[in-house]
Image 1 (cartoon, helix red, strand yellow):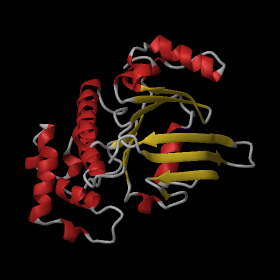
Image 2: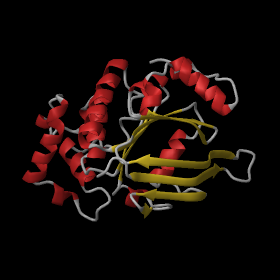
Image 3: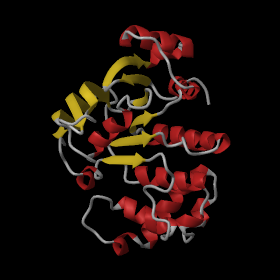
Image 4: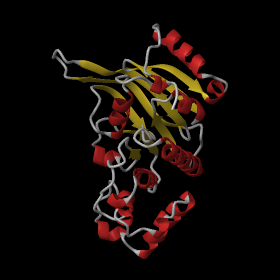
Amino acid sequence: MNENKSLLNLRGITKVFSKGTVDQVTALNGVNLDVNSGDYIAIIGSNGAGKTTLLNVIAGVFPPDSGEIILNGRNITGLSEYRCARYVGRVYQDPHVGTAAKMTIEENLAMALLRGQPRGLRAASNKQRRELFRAALAPLGLGLENRLSTLVGTLSGGQRQVVSLIMATISKPALLLLDEHIANLDPRTAQVVLDLTDMIVKKEKITTLMVTHNMELALKYGNRLIMMHEGRIVVDLGKEEKAHLTINDLVAAFEQAAGRKFVEDKILLRR
């Protein structure tokens, strides 16, 4: 696929929670975004900026109140999460989400391979697919390809998140969503998962949106950086623009775009 081809288009996406009550919150406020095929976009912003809501709307967890979502030329606005799973892979912040603890690595991968398709698990559990699973796990260097019969619930948090990553990418989705997928891991394990993520995304050329609280990581990974504030995209930097930026430069860009001082927890500034 041509890397310059537009893959994902968001037009005027709005999402309001608790509408008409004292708790009303505008999580997304007329978001417009064009994502090219092959983009690896880091999305940063403080709590409540709308980052996870953006991923949830794209993934079909809930529909937008207004606007359109076009994926690979198809209007998926309001499509259910189950049906979106045919096109969208996702890794969550919690390693326990997205995997079945009482099923083996092989069974989890088999479910992921057929996600969104009306087939049973048995259809995926054959020798050919087992070799596919081993081939997907072997390059990671963790030995998981030799542990297909291991229950996922017995794995460490990092190993389980790696399984989640393979589950999200094994069916070659059009789009990969990473929702702070290293936030609950210790620094050493987080770096391993990040490096593996980078390797898989580049090798498979999967268009990716990665939400993070960490400015340092947002500057280091991907070819594009987006900063959100109060449900809007206030900064959008390409590869060349962000290549020579420092964290202080990024803070200044935010302040200029948002029209306010940057006041946030240190987690935004360093690991």
